[in-house]
Image (cartoon, rainbow, N blue to C red; front, side):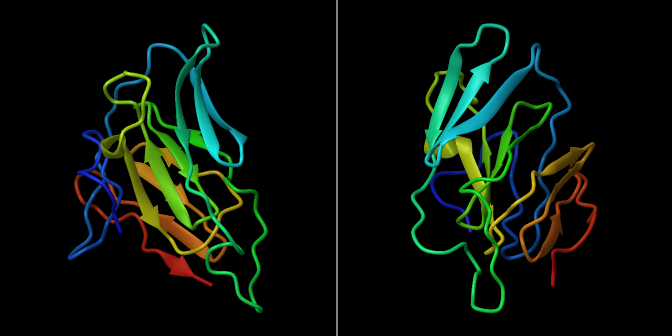
Length: 163
C-alpha cells in the first residue's frame, strides 16, 4: 500500500501488512500557523500564514474516471480532494479522489516534496469530509465507512468499517 522510499520520519500511516502498524504522533506544535489548500484539482499549496509565502507545493496524482470504489449502486461525488487537515506536527493530511489519504510534510524544509516525504493509505473509496485529528488519533471517513488509526503505543482506536 506504500510507494516510494520509506515513510516520513514523523509518521507512518497504517500499511497493515503483514500486521497493523501504529502511526507515530509527534507532540510538538508549529511555531506559527500555516495552511494548506488545493488551488487546482492537481496541486496542493502549503502557505505560511505569517508571510503569505508558499512553503511548498505538491502535484497530486491524476485520476481518471469515477471516484475510487464507485459502482452503479454506490456513487460518491466529492471534489478531487476533500478538505485537508493540518496536524500540530506540521503534517498535511489530504483525502483524495483516488481513495487514498495522503500525509505530506516538507521534513527537510527545502521547499520540495520528495517521495520520502509523502505517505498514503488506500481506503479504496473517495472522500467528502475532512480528516479529524485529536491526541493520538487520526480519523478519516471515506464514502463507505470510517477508519480510525492507532496510537503510537499500538492501541487500536477502531477498525475500518464499511457500509
